[in-house]
Image (tube, rainbow, N blue to C red; front, side, top):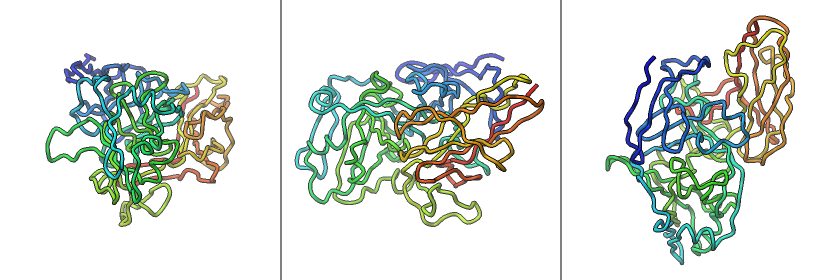
Length: 396
């Protein structure tokens, strides 16, 4: 099979796209074509969803690491016009609106005038795993790799807002980046937080990721980090913060990224769609398999460590259970030490392949609030998928 070279201009470089030549068997997805992998600036080969805007998925094997390397950390953009370069010396972060002291902060200001804070947190696209939805829904057909765990270093958003002297009566705070739409009619990608959430001490304006400058494709030079919330709020190339005395009414808050309000997992019935919608926010509890990968062949008699990851919106994972009999009985797995409540947590289960043939496993996580995973999950947008996952392997 020949490689396909896509000459896609991005930051004055090229993305090289090739079919996946690995011997790993792929999950069967309705209407899905063979995976294409791309080499983008600053990245190793990653699964390509779209080239304009660039959207790249982390291969599952990198989830064997506690911290997702910057060069394979998933990439998600909504608008295709990204600046080809950013001068760190002239860059400024503007803070204005319903404040008494508007600011224009340089990167040096952020690093010298505010306390530095580091937090470990999982960033997860709201549409992670959308390709597995049944019935199928439109949108980016992510597998399980639209997420990544990292150490984020930066400044508390609350400290920046304190310096700006937010006026009494502030209600919302909006965040805009340097990405732009190719057409005037396309809404600018601007997200907002209620002032109470913006003042949460865990919300950061980050300038480092895993002890390095943010990669360009992950939002250099600044990224809003909202631990425990879906990454739609993690605005990259952040250069504008605005405080409002009323409700922010931008497209990406009022028309997009809405989920059913009636339950924690945002489930709805395809035959009677919810009429009560709200902006997506906190991540729900979830677990995935990492190794062995689907359809792996295990040698008869071999010992096998089944391993995966579990996470939620910051309450903390309490237990992860695995079933070998399609959910009739469940056994607790062993959890690695916590890296922090906003981080994913690794689980392990020792299994011996004593019987030839096909074997299936289910996995579910439960957090400290007692929230767990449903047997089936669906909504019209393919958001917040946390259905109990199934892994099938063959013993020979």
